Amino acid sequence: MKALVITEGADAARELAAGARTLADEVVLVSFAEAPEGVADKVACIAVPEGSIVDDAADTVISLFDAEQPGIVLVEPTRRMKSIAGRLAAHAGTAVITDVMSFEGGGAKSLYFGGVGERVQKACGGVAIYTVGAGTFAEAQPSGANTVLNIAWVTPAHPVELVDRKPIQKSGVDLFKADAVVAAGRGFAEEADLDLARALVEKIGGGLACSRPLTEGVNWLPTETYVGVSGLMLSPKVYVAAGISGQMQHMVGCNRASTLFAINKDKNAPVFKQCDYGLVGDVKEVIPALVAAL
Ligand SMILES: Cc1cc2nc3c(=O)[nH]c(=O)nc-3n(C[C@H](O)[C@H](O)[C@H](O)COP(=O)(O)OP(=O)(O)OC[C@H]3O[C@@H](n4cnc5c(N)ncnc54)[C@H](O)[C@@H]3O)c2cc1C
Image (cartoon, rainbow, N blue to C red; front, top):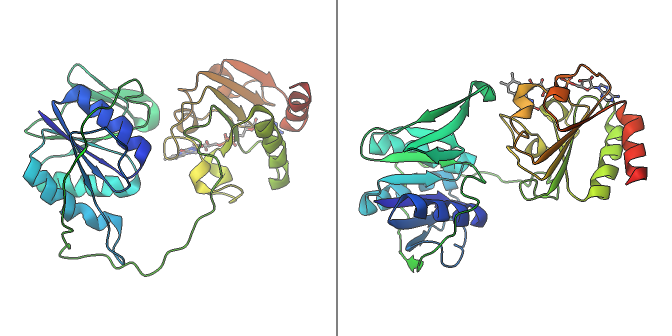
């Protein structure tokens, strides 16, 4: 069987191509960035023309899909790649199985009901399309000659015109790669209190994340730093949930951390049933004491 891998980031290209190798005999990579060396049998790099957007590459990807006829498609779960996956699935007459965490027994496992349960789904029909989260194939080793496939841009019938572009504020640290993550929640009463969390981040070396209300509610931190079912799904070595109650929508984004610490002034907060170590106390007292002790 042949696998098609569709990615926009080099890390995802490496991991998903390696994972595809465990599921298929031949791996074809479609990349919107420079492809890493030696990860696939064939590599097609798509250059998006000036004035076009990546989502409009769907027809170009479809032309490659038709030429290669893969039995399985693995897609990096970014918004743009998911948009392409949906249109590819419509073209192929199939569905997309999203946010896969592992493949077992011919099925794909993912969370559902906001993380309350897990389900295993199996694609019916000739082709299976999955969006696959980071870490699913962390152990797999990529290989391949990276033979270059030249692919012509196919202008869509109804393209989107790019009218403006502006940079968004970045947190500075790639939270997916950080070994330690300190996440702040609504237990931080004022924006200035976040400096306490920043001091802890600096001490243990890592990144600052948060619960959703600190982004969408008050805009204290960038949207790209909130963790949970509709935000980032992280699996760092250490995760410190500070002033976070432990609602399931947040915890599904961090419960794969190797060690989970919680700081909360309410000893009955649900987070204490889900952490490895819990500190009952006010973030304003506990964090400075922790920083001093460290
Ligand atoms: C469809 C849907 C999707 C969602 N997706 C996400 C998501 O992806 N990520 C996410 O985070 N949320 C998400 N939410 C929101 C989620 O349900 C919770 O509302 C949110 O996670 C709560 O954030 P919090 O823990 O910071 O705040 P709260 O629940 O208000 O908890 C604050 C905690 O801080 C403690 N506290 C207060 N003061 C202090 C202090 N001085 N020192 C120590 N502790 C203190 C309190 O005891 C409390 O436990 C989603 C909700 C819905 C409906």
